[in-house]
Structures are given as C-alpha cells and as structure tokens.
Image: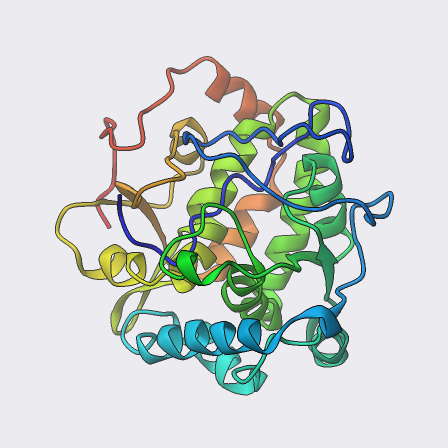
Length: 301
C-alpha cells in the first residue's frame, strides 16, 4: 500500500440513519477501511467542543513531528499562497486551539473553523461551508498511522485546509461550493459534486510561474503524495475540466492516478458561479470514467 500522511474520503459522506446509531458513514470513493469517530457530544449541526485540554503531550509531540515533516518539503511543491499562510500561522508547536486561530481567520476572510467528531453527513458539511464555517476533525491519528490515515484527522484538516482559507479568492470558492452542495443534495447530484471537491480541494494542482504546485489538502498533508503529484512520471495531469472531473471516479486508499490542474484560484471560483443543473444532467447521460482512465479531449497540463 502507498505511504501517505492522509487520504481523506469524500467530503460528501452521509449516514444511513443518524449520528449516534453506530452506522458507518457512506463515502463515494473506493476503499475498504471503515471510518471512525465519537459523536456522543455532537450538536444538531454535527459541530462539537474541541476539548483541546484533553490532548496529551504525546499527541502534541506527534503533531509537531507531522508538521515539521510537511513544512520541510513544501518549497518547490506547494503553491505560493499556501506557503505564505503556513508561515504566518505560527502553529508548529502543538495542536492548535481553534478559538485562537479563529480570531485571525475571521479578520482575514470571515471564516471560522469548527470542531467535529469526524466525518459528517453531506447536508451538514455543505451547510457549514455555505456559512463560512470549516469543519475540522478534533482527533489526531495514532503513532502507528503517522504515514497513513484513511480519513481526515486534525492534522490533515488543519494543516491541509485552514491555510488557504486565509486566501480571499479560495475562501470564496469554498463558500460557493457549500452553497452548491445544498442545491446538489436536492438534485441527487452529490456524487458528482464530491468528485469536484476531491479533484480540487483535496488533490488539486495549480500552474504557477515556477511550474506545477499542489494546493489540495490531501497532497499538502501527505508524507509521500505531495512529491509524487508534482514530480512523478506516472500520473495523468489533465487541464481543468468541470464535467470531466464529475465523471471521474477516485480511490481513497492509494495515490491518485489522475490530477487536474487549474491556472488560478479565480478559475475555480468562476467555475462555481454558473448553474450546475444542466451540467449534472449532461454528466448523468455520459459514462463514468475510472480513476486512471484517459478520456477523448483531455488537455494535458
């Protein structure tokens, strides 16, 4: 199995019959590992208290180890906006206190982060994003999971996602995505929208002056896939194509065989401004594509 820091499942995970009934969330990606999380104190919107004081010194030490390892490999691989935000966060020594980060994040882009027990239902996820509230898992992986954890933990969510919420254009894209998700849930199109999230917010690449760089959180928080996504010869790298993304399945337990490349964050924001209803209809009439499948009309990036 490939070694990664985090391979999160679909953001559009949903529960069969409620949060506290012991039923595993359903994800749209392909994989075999069961998810986890303690939802006993979750509120009706699935947020909860962070309970920062419950983290042990061993957990803070593991977080520092993860943080230092990822920061060391950002240059030449991560996008400029992410590197600048990470350097300004001052969050390297311990698991961050969400309330302290929120003071700065609210001032910068009007966003805040909210603690959640783990994966949350798609409707709750979309609604939080539409309200400029980003859900961050409160638990940290175990030491034996340092190279790979199958679903988002606090390191993946915070290190991978939060820095770009300080970027105004990307922050607006995330809110627009959440609003689009609420509409998609009424149109039975959440799977298509989950694929867009996967191939942009989680595993997206951007072309900058220095070459390809990563902006997806699944890459930025990964021990191995960050370098693989930018430099390896094997993967397909395809120019941004909304319908192509929505048709393409993905894996949650291996490196991605296909990455999509944007030219700017403005391109992402503009892509969410249109009405997706006819796009969902067109995608539904076309065959799905395997994660490693080439498609006619692919624009190499």
